[in-house]
Length: 387
Ligand code: ADP
Ligand code: MG
Image (cartoon, rainbow, N blue to C red):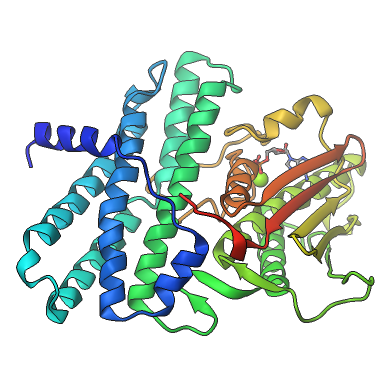
């Protein structure tokens, strides 16, 4: 396709509003994975994804104050454009081939082609968060921009939120095509996500990263408390429909922050004491299942945050860490999993993940004492259409 054809296709698709599908619909499509239902789902995705990608391409193209000209932003735009092109080629193929489009062989071939293409696309876009972060950083350094630039903030919120939706669709489609019948799972959605299990994993991973980062033998304890309404411990029943990967991401980010605050305030208030002799205040992770929401509260005694800085913690690139870790965009992780802190993305992205399924993330702090983070999760089987 010539570049002018491509441009006009992008402009055309960018005019179509995206279509949301609810979690319930995703589950329904995925739970009857015949070649025919997969075909329907794949046809939907090769129509829907180009629309969503086109919206983002246009937005990247028109970012204000020269942000659109940053090389990392252009790189991301090229990935979006390439993926757009690959998808509309399949799209036109599927419509031009309509004579035998009802045959089972055609369905199988089409499903394979879409799944392979989606896998390539997913991989191509893995470093998007890091690369956009890099672009914003370059721009910030080159123009001396104010960190709390609201148009950039709302662009990034929209951009990353849309990315969560796109990756959800792609991940879901690859999963239902490749592993149709995993216990309790429909694609990447787990109908019985076990909160306690995910919390234990997040605790282990974040403590491990903390120990590595500070070179300490044992990081602060994280107490997992799951009382039921009567105040007794509940072992069972803490399951609900969710995407375990999203839950893991949020808990991991929040816990790393609490661990860092706890370790650093303890070091500060005990100058000269050997790190391994330090006694840390434990962090509490409390999970309550209410009727409407599941709420997870993470409380630390890590010294809190000054009230004037609270709005900043939700901005991208706000971090109190001195040395920003290497933002190498070729970095091969799906998200910022590995570093202890330093991109300033932890809270902002986690709040997007929470909101994506109708939940929210709030933070309350007592300066001089500690911080409480509330993660509200809507019991999503009722959630409306998502984009
Ligand atoms: P990062 O951890 O990469 O700096 P985050 O978005 O996770 O980015 O956090 C932003 C900033 O908010 C942190 O640098 C820190 O200053 C502050 N912060 C977050 N959580 C806590 C906490 N529990 N206690 C104290 N400060 C916190
Ligand atoms: Mg963090």
